Image (cartoon, rainbow, N blue to C red; front, side):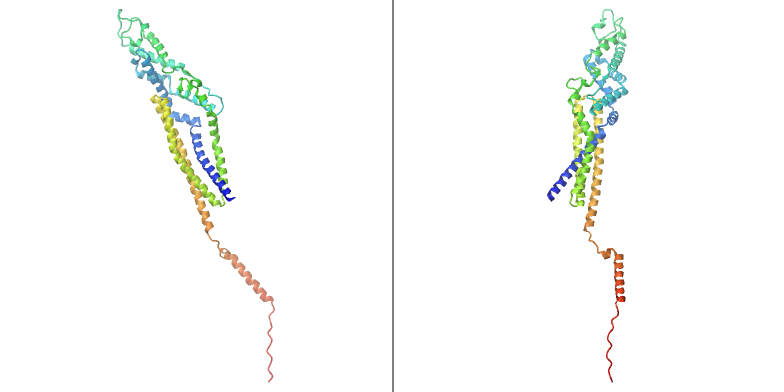
Length: 385
């Protein structure tokens, strides 16, 4: 039965190794992606809120220059300023917070699907009105007045293509026409009302299956990861107990556990390469679907913060495992040293008790001599003279 005992100790050692490595990664996820407050903090640090307005401005500029006749005459600074006014940081923060809150409620099982509605109709109208007003004033304000022979009808051409200002045409009419042209473009905020069904794993308003259906198993995985550290902690305690009690000599059980801690720290250290590769793959995936530079840079900073947080947690566990390994190794060496020390004789170990017993023996001998009667020796015979 000795080999059965050794086999069980080996099995529980492997279980201990797996649990020690697993609790590192689950704790990293718990402290990084499992808390919406942490994610919101990193989003703010990576300037995602500010990059959203810049991204909208870039998409709008591209659409205006390509789809509106004479749109290239509108200054990019005008478009950028209008986007910052229509989509300020507090608004984007509110939108992102609502999006995260609804999705975490879905992951936790509070709702069966994410429930949010992002309505940017008013903001889009404000953006279009400001761009159209600035474009009309900038372009028409410097135009000379047209003569009767060269005055074209305003309805037949774009105000941004006019070479002269027709008689009786004011800036307000031109602004209204430019606004209609801006609203008809499809390059940005084509549907200003965004719901979960409008978002797929490929982007917003691009068609395809909604992301919550494509990732239907995400809530179960999220909830299991929430419970996994407690399960692994119980597995660690049970494995430690089984290895110590199952070992024929307890000091060898401690030595085995210290080696498991050493291998766990080395495995976590080796997992750094995997973490770096996974972060690089996630960054490439994000950049492939986000072509606008401001937003892609913000996402890169966010992923960098996430990777740093995971590596910090890994470092803490590596230090803890190495310290425990050294402590258990010291205990093993101490127990081994004591087991090899020869036992001293009782008299040398307890000199007082030895002297007391010696005195007792002398006392008993003295008493025996006192009680025993003296032997009389026969007198020699007298000689007769």
